[in-house]
Image (cartoon, rainbow, N blue to C red; front, side):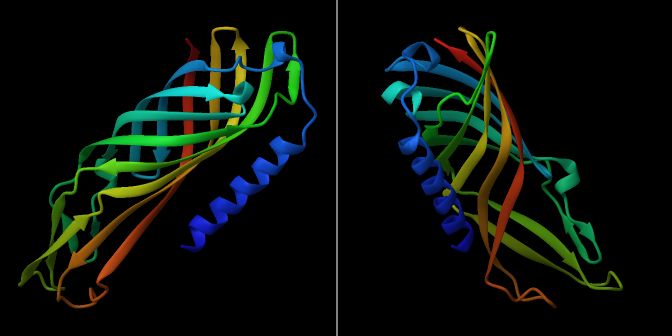
Length: 212
């Protein structure tokens, strides 16, 4: 919860920035009701997220709504192999739908055809619930037990970045990304006695944006 509050505070600050800026020429902003298609790669440690998103902008590009469709994948590096734990099913790939709200500032850098502005996106990643199993061994490898993780169907997702418009057809975006993927786990084995664990994922993202 504290992390979500921090993100909401950041969102509020950005909204205040948007409200207090002076109006700019219409040629410097997206036209009302513009459409955008983005292809995004998100890297959060051992989690890789790929998505194709559609954004519908209103209010001269300051506010937009959109929806993404993609897959998040846990790489082999994300498998647990420390001390007495080993994860059986590494390399997971999961589909998701991501409805989101996007708030942007005006362009604060304008040089020739290149323009730059900042933005924040908040959304909910909707996953199909799943379970996975970790086989846990004791220190001398003589006894094993299964630990079952059950995922949540809804996770919070946030990106904070800058958009560089390279031409009238679009540009690229880069920045910071954050999301929650929470699992409840059931086990009664050695030091595993916490009924709930939460994976707060931090990373970077890169997207290619196309104006439709």
